[in-house]
Length: 339
Image (cartoon, rainbow, N blue to C red; front, side):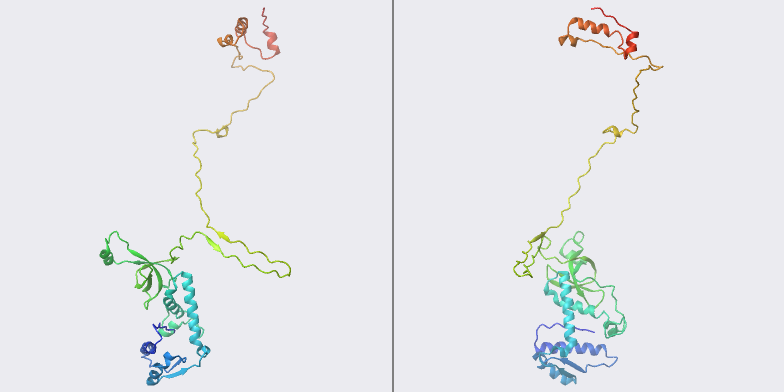
């Protein structure tokens, strides 16, 4: 089981105060079993040797001091510090949170580590389960740094405005857990404050965006440095130009032109094509229909175009008879015109 305390300073009095709190917490937890702290391992720092060493002697606790510049002598604590810092750094970078929240990130890393299986424990037993005797719940875990919509109580809405039309939640970010599984720590960027809240709606797809990040439209990639050729006498390849990657532009498709279904646009719109026209060499009149008579009708427009009067009379005489279609019709109806 890992426990972490954050020191405001490295004064001997501050270190002694924190150790007294830790000793009281551990001995109270194992009071029924009668467990007590028997030994403490620490380095030769002045903040430990000034006051903490005398307190340990007074309480009958054995102190093991490591040599100077040998962190491997206290390997368990040193490895734990590196593991927690790696986890905190990853969570801060992944959530795009500022570095000033590193203490909350480290606390969350400790919270996760106590609920993960350990190599020194058999099976799926976790340090939290070994310490408290129960299996920890993981249903309340959330993505570190995600958006948290915190509910505003009705009393606060009435105090600062009209409670009926004002916002019922505030936009915050999740940064850690409290001692209870139903209480979370949230961060207000506007006021730079950390509060505890219970009624929260999480959006694990959105993270913190600094001012100006949302307005950045292009991404610039750093060109690689020029490399020397492996063969002497041949110059190396020139550096690649700076590449500007712009986000894709999605343009709306133009609407298709509306065509009225009632108005045909061509012969292909008719449902039934017209029947084909067949021509015969010899024309035979239909039994139900008489022979077609084609007439030439003269008009006054011929005279206006310079036609002589005898031509107009000729056209009028011809128009009284039918125009033959072939040679046999001409012989049957021979017309003799005298000039």
